Structure formats: structure tokens, C-alpha cells
Image 1: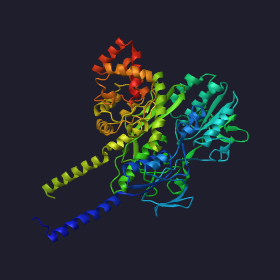
Image 2 (image 1 turned 120 degrees about the vertical axis):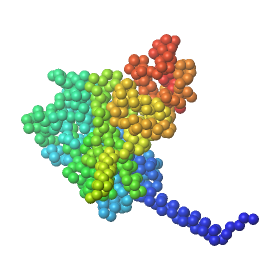
Image 3 (image 1 turned 30 degrees about the horizontal axis):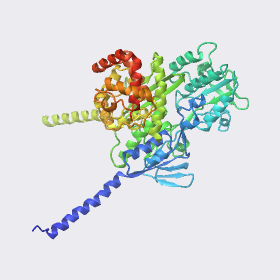
Image 4 (image 1 turned 30 degrees about the vertical axis):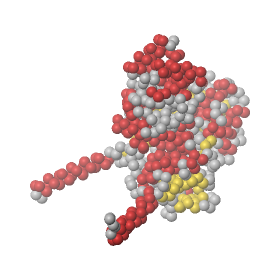
Length: 429
Length: 199
């Protein structure tokens, strides 16, 4: 009969035990705690994709608001094509993906102790922290345009109550009124956004208040997708004629505003005082407050390693989205989503002691400028390690062709609508 | 320094130089990293919620690669894909193709005209099913039609019929026959409603 030698038996048990002991050690190395500050497109994407890549990582997302209103597509609320509610996204999808969602305002990040503190007095220790600070308006940079002034003269550059306020004012405006928009200096969130806004407000006026006029006072002499917008304005809104609904005044022609007169409902430039029925000031912007409070900024934005989005100021903290200094990539929802995935992959690798993987980034951004008329800009990017830069792949990307067919412009409207549904499903779904 | 040690030094210099070059040229991004960049427009894991942008999950590697190459060269017309495809190497495209082939095509169902879909089913059986098998769920070297976004399918038909996109040989025979025997290009619409509605 076959017997087991007692000594061999004990040795066998020993081997098994040591394997069992070793296993949790490996698991511990792969896990870790990540705290994500901010639940916009960048933060929510990063949180979700970390859980997707490695469910052993504990991810806590801290966001002050119960719902997020996307800035993208909010110009369609201003033209009446879409409800504000259709821009609203909650955090149930993230919770389902295993992200611990906390609604509180982060007031401090201690990079040395690796702890995030909230207004509600909660403390969250982390192994790695991801900060998606978004943007803040630089109030006061344009004399007269303060946070209080924004209650009367909306910026509507963060979607939500500001969007609703501007829509209400446009609806109340009598036919024949003047709507003045102040376009911001570079860099700012959504480079073609102000001009899409002018287009869609013109679309609304054309059908409801055809005697009205739009004046864009610009701090710049050129803008994103300019030729495509001007082509659309010519086609739909009489641009270039004396009956044009839209007038664009570049800085070189005196468009740069010098002050806002809230009580007088007027914008002053060096040459003129322009009275308006409705004014929309889109002011200069900078990274959201928490980026400054946590010491992550240099100038107005947060400098980062472009392969990992780790802060150059505080180790262990990653900063991404509109608030980061991602230079070549525009401050767009798609860029934020793409950076969220690159950051997630970097964080997952770094937590388990591996080098961050080679990144890949994309941006695609649609603008709807009239009925059945949209165009896009696209960019495919790789990482240039020598320059720590996000570099556009040569020969790729760029604008919709200026001579695209009406059919293609129409298709791009439906692709824009699809983009909105798919990217929001990818972020919060 | 002896002659042989000098040669050894030269070799080391050469190796260091070569290594310097390879590290500055970054490694190819992982298939997942590359594929993740598509989700913004095509939906999580390549399954679109529409209304128009197509689902790219579950496409055969052959069809995915051919589509991207034709977008890149301009052979296949597009609004944005030509500009995007130019950003990827052949290796990148192959990696993305393999990645998406393994992902399931989500078919939550989209709104179609039931009468058209019914008429389309009979036509599809005669003109389409030999290549688009199993209700169009299988696409060996051809697109997956079942549950694909309706506007996208209509755009594709238009591009083929308008001579903007070159049909495959077998496809051309069937398209010509369909136009001739079923009363012109209007016959495609019921077929599109049928395939779009497959769950």
C-alpha cells in the first residue's frame, strides 16, 4: 500500500502555506486607494476606467454636486432645441462600476501626508490622487464683470442655472433687440464654443425674432473653425451683407471690451459704448480653485507630465482636463475623456510598481452652426517624451473640409448628436 | 589602449547610441489604450447608442482593417473618419481590430418601421443573406448589419448607389439586381429597417 512519509507530508503543507501567504501579498501590491477630486468628464472617466482596468483598486470620487450639467451641447439649450435636463448626468453609473461617490466639496489636498479634506470635515487618505478641477472664471479681469454681475449678465460657460438664465433672457428679449457677446481670450474651455453659441442664437432669432442682431466683441483677431463658421453665417444669417444678423468685431477693429456697465446694460470698448438688450460675457478663465489651493498651478493652469498627467508641482497627484496645461489638446470634453483614460492607465500601472504605459489620445469636437449644418475638428495625438509634449500625428486630424457637401454637413449633425450620447455613456453610464 | 579594447569601446558607443534612439521612439500603445480613444464617438467598448454613429464592436478583423485603410487613403468617403484614420499606423489598426472583434455588439433595439422591416426581411433573404448571414449578425469580411444604426446604414447605401464608395464584386451584382428587379433604390429602405431592427 502507498503511504506518505510524515516528513514529506509536513514539507508539502509548508509549501502550500507559503504559497497561500504569498498570494495576498501580490493582491495588496495591485490594489491601493485612489481619490478623484471632481466628477466632470475628466474625473468621472478616470474613476470609471481605473475600476474597469483593476477592480482591486479602491476608487473614491468626491464631487460637490449631485448632478453634472455638460457644457457641451448647452448652446442647443440657448436656441431652444434641447432641454437643460437633457444635459444632466448623475453618478449612479459610477457607483455601479464600484466607484465610491461622495458629495462634498474638497477644500484641501495635503500632498505630503496624502490626504484629501472636504468642507464637511471628512478626510480621505490616498495612494494616488486625481484632480479634475475644471475651470473658474477670472472675475474682475474685465472691469465691472464680477461674480455678482454674472447673476444679471450670465457667462453661461458652466452649464446649469447660468444656461437657464441666459435662455430666459433671450426668450424675453423683444424682436429687434441687440444681443452682445464678449468672447474670451485664449486659452479657454471649448475654443469654438462662443461662435457656435452665436450661430445657434442666430438660428433662434431667425425663426422667432428676425429683426434682432448679434454682436460678438472679441478680445482676439482670429478664432477656432473661423472659415467654417463664416461660411455658415453667410449661408444662413446674411453674414457679409448689410443685413447680417451676426457682426463679429475683432480686437484689431476695436472689439476688445474695456468695461462692463451692469446697471446701464452696456459694454464699453476703447471706441464705443454698445447698449444691448441681452449681454453674455464669457470671461478669461483659469484652472478651478482647488488646483490653486493645492499648490498645483503655475500661472493660470496646472503643469503636468503629459504621459501620466502627474503634477509637476506635487508628486502623487494627477491633474487633467480643462484645468491642466495640456497645451496642444484643446480644452474640450473629448480631450478630458481621452486624458481620463490615459491617466487611469498610468495610475493603475504606477500603483503596482510598473512604468506608465505608452499613451494614445484623441480629440473630436463638433459645432452645430445652423439647420442640418455641422462641422468638426479632429486630432490624433502621441506622446513626445523628449519635449514632454502631446504631439499631433503628422498628416492626421484637422477640420471638416470647407467644400464639404450639404449632405456631409447634415450627417455631421447626427454624428454630433451621437457623439453626445456615446461620450456621456462612456463617462457616466 | 589596445586595438581590441578600442574596438570594444566603439561597439559600446554604438550600442548606447542605438539604445538612445530606441528609447526616444516610444513603444506602440497597447490595443486597449488605442481602442479606448474610439469610445468617445462609438460608445463604451465600441457599442454605439446612436442615433447615427455605427457600432464597431464585434466587426471582423478583415472588415475593420479594410475600412480603416480605405478611410485613410480616401477610397471610402467619410465626414471625420478619414482625418482620424490617418493618425494610426497599420500595426495600430490591426491591434484595434483584434481588440474590437472580441467585444459584444450591444443591441438594445432601435425604432424602426415594422411594416418596412417585414417587407425588408423577405428582400434580405433573397439579396443579402448569402454574405450577411444569421440575420446580419455575422460579418466575415463584411459589415455587421444586425442592429446597426439606421441612419448610418442609409448613408452607406447612398454612398454605394451614388458611386462614392466602391462596392465589393458580389455586392455589386446583388445591388444591381435589387435595383432592376425591385423598382429602384427605394427597395433598399425596407431592408435597412429590417436589419436595423434585429435584436
